[in-house]
Amino acid sequence: MKKKSVLKLFWNLSIITTIIFAFIPKVGIRIEEPYYYFGFPANCLTYYKGPRLTPDIIGIVFNITFFYFVFFILNKIFKKYYKVVRKGAH
Image 1 (tube, rainbow, N blue to C red):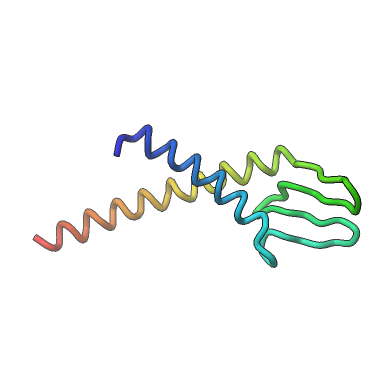
Image 2: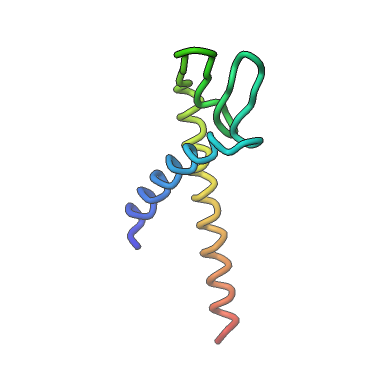
C-alpha cells in the first residue's frame, strides 16, 4: 500500500474507533448523575436529562488523534516484527 493510503486508512480507523469506544459500557460511558459522559480516553459527548446532548470538540479531536497515533505505532511495530520473522525464515 502507498503511504498516503495507509495514513488515510489510519484516520478512518481512528474515527470509527472513537465512535465505537464512546458507547462501550464501563469503558466509554461514565455516569455521574444527572450527567452521562461518552468517550474514551477523553469525553466526546455529554448528555443531560432531556434533550441536552453536548459534543466536546476538543475531546473528539483528542480521541481521533490518540487512536491515529496508536494505529501508527502498531503499524511500525508490526512492520519491524514482520521483517524479523521474514528474515529468520530464510
